[in-house]
Length: 251
Image (cartoon, rainbow, N blue to C red; front, side):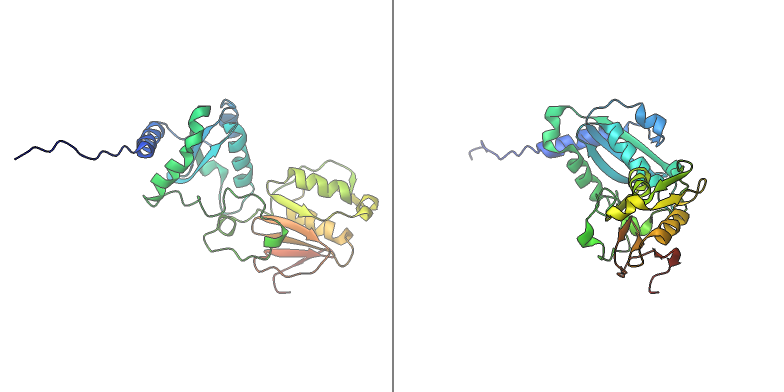
């Protein structure tokens, strides 16, 4: 009887790369997610893993600079309620430029999703501002912004003295650890606001709303603040600010 002289062979490059990436990361010890640890990294491309306590919650990539990307995450998490940045840690791998074409983070995400891990991948954690058209979209219960809404008790290191409303809105949009989107107005440059010493965000928003025209409203959504000349209702509103008053949803 003739012997078998041919067979089929399939080489899975992606599985081999996934196994090697996972093995390389497995040998790393998570470092506390402090600014000092992040800024000690080289400004190179790579992949990274975030841990909440001992739980791997997110895998991401940095196309140019790992410290820059991780610092963005640090800022975001630090400005959220229900979570502490001191509970976060990270590991990362520098990835050579010619290796990035195979999307190493996707290989890792696929691997860990199959194990029921990385709950923050796909729950909105890494998303940018979805835009005005999505402000009235109701979030799922496991969305990152629903689990860890913006911290309105965040203390602000405001400059002393006073600012125009235009200057203050611009300062908040730049300095807050979460998105603050607002519609500008020429009148804002004529409105002067006296600044309290080290107020929380909640206090400043109420103060700003007292200086806005009557038709304006500031709304705190789970993941951002918005300011527009309307009194619209938003399904996921945490609270609104009108005429110096804090307004609960439905009021």
